[in-house]
Length: 339
View (spheres, rainbow, N blue to C red):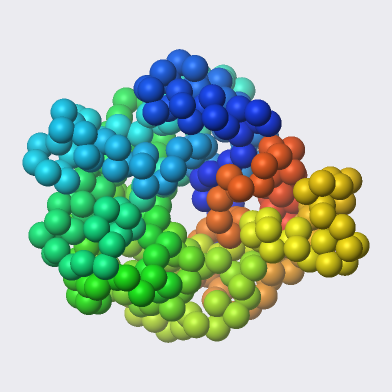
């Protein structure tokens, strides 16, 4: 099975557009953000991302909590009505999907990222353990999953991602493993496509393996290659679970710190050196090398590869686009066996 190139979601806005776009989202003036969303999606497609995520320009928590906490959208406290569980960015992608079909003769396949119940719970309640409320959040997340999969559109939702970056790194999580597994089961029980969990640390990846709703575990292994050492192939095989490996670094501030130290400058002020991130650091050769290393350890248990995380903090769209281009070339080099 070919390894599929996908991306995590967030993407830089055009310079000077951040405040306007975020305010338009907050005010539900979606016609004012349509072209920004569509253009970012076009950039991902042009970079050869095979299952691009909808461009996520909203805060990952507020995007969903804003609906869940809206009394007019709730069936009960923390339980969103199915009819209100909309991801507006998906609706805004219709023009791009129609263009894609006209140009390629096939439907665009899209990745849908949804903030997970643990993450939403932590944002709202912190270090408490109200299991009944966590269950309501999980049921709400699943309603976003179901709504996305069932919407009438010109594209296909080919991949669901439940984003749970706090699992494995946040000491405020007070729920035990069984409760987290049950939460993951409820969060994507409606999914009938590949369902990833996006983690920032694979320390407790085995929890995701034990979930009936998750069949792909994401590992941010480009910036943290040692993370792959925490994952056992035998565990993946036992639970019929696959990997998504990060093969391109997205920790922009870590990479610019390296450039600052190398040249004794501030590259955010002297931006001529910023391009070195994609011309000398995150090159196709480096990306292909990382994927070969991961494949040597995990073989066909790797189903997806792409950047470690989202690119929303990259500030410049052209730089983010170039990283996606390099990632696509690197994955192609791996497939072709070239160096």
